[in-house]
View (cartoon, rainbow, N blue to C red):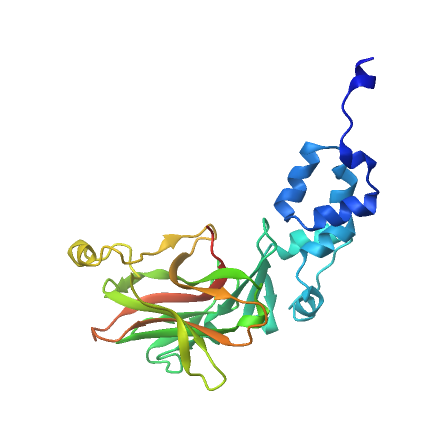
Amino acid sequence: MADENREISPFCLLPEDCIEKIVSFTSPRDACKAVAVSPVFKSVVESDTVWERFLPPDYKEILSRSCSSVKFSTMKELYVLLSESLLLDEGKMSFRLSRSTGKKCYMLSARELDIAWKDSLTYRKWNSLPESRFGEVANLYKVYWLEISGRFQVKMLSPNTNYAAYFVFKFSKLHHELDCSSKASVKFLDDCTNEIGGDVGHTVYIDPLADELEMERNINARVPCSRIDGWLELELGEFLVAEGDNREVEAKLSETEILYRKGGLIVEGIEVRPKES
């Protein structure tokens, strides 16, 4: 009698393809939560139809740029694989999906950044580090100012999404004179590389142990934080990706006023990813 009186979920009355369509308009996180709400969702949440909708429309083009073969048997398995770091374009860029939202995240390697002193062996070395996702990192061991920037095509990012750019780095054991303030900016560029707005003019500190008195004068300055991959990251600024935007966005870090010899800055790259609310 109890089973007869049990309330039937209205979803049980819907065709499976209809439920698939409903679930595919949610997020990966919500789809996985739906299984706990009703057993009706269990088979649907595992379907290729749902998980292909969670993948970016250009996922096949992204896979074609991968440095290694990506093997998968289901769309959900592919989604999970793409939520890990995938090297693209001969190892010059990495890609991943935000596991909870399916939004795209990219990182330009140090080789792809515009770095002052980058082409001189007197001021920098290219090293391989086991903790790096890339084949090489830039070790700036003797420079007098810092100018580091990277450019991304806005159209390759997830539309209608607020992004932030992050400088990813670490220090060598003998780093020095990196405790002064720097400037960070994120700017859109038009076809003639003219700057046309963005998130500009932030004061930042590369070294979290910078002089306390100086930091007190810049109480709103940004400082780096630790990442789960063992690197440090420093937010450079935010930008909104609109539907159909074909511009470039440039993220930049600079310190060109205090011309002491600086050293021991190891550059991994610049990452852009959706800004967490």
